[in-house]
Image (cartoon, rainbow, N blue to C red; front, side, top):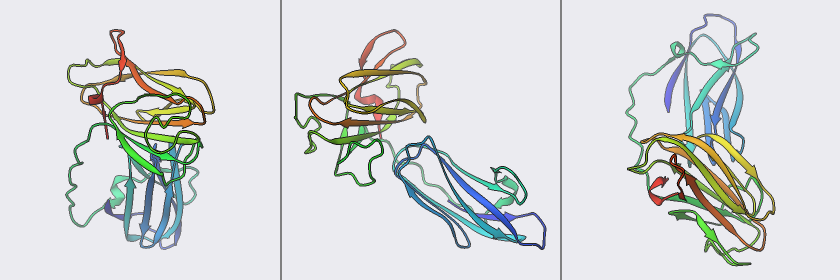
Length: 259
């Protein structure tokens, strides 16, 4: 995103403005803010539903070029640019009248989604894995169970690892809009974000348990989904199901998942 930031507050004094980028539910994300020089440069793996990075800069009256670079591996999340004016006690959204651009920029359409969820695997059972996975693959559905010490996901590990499954949930053709109960069955720990909200968090070495959350799904909409799974030892199990508005329970079909 390239825009020009026009500072309209007329003053001969050099004022110190704090600017913040707020990124909602963004994992594996890099974002950089430059206003004539780098102000924010952050790469982070976020588990919190909202991440803020703050930088300060002194601005005089006049025109100041601004450039925001953002790289996001998954999700469709907003990017919010705020500031705190001199003497103000709180941040506010940068108003549209102080933003302008010299040339119009055509934004290419988003690439078509592909079927399945992307699974990334890490050599740790931490609830916040490191940035570098040891392997990844695409899963058409999630319905896995294994006997003791078997590599159920076929990624070269059977114990002491975690998996991060990301993509979108949507209603296939023929499915009616309405309240769906989305269920994750897991052994060991897991947590899930769906539609930008944390739906449950049950980490640690546990036996099989199911957690469900109700969400109103609309036909034609894609809802960001993230499931984090931990495998400590013994039996490994992970399943993704839903209960439709008519009460029917089923494994979430492959054509409801995309990335």
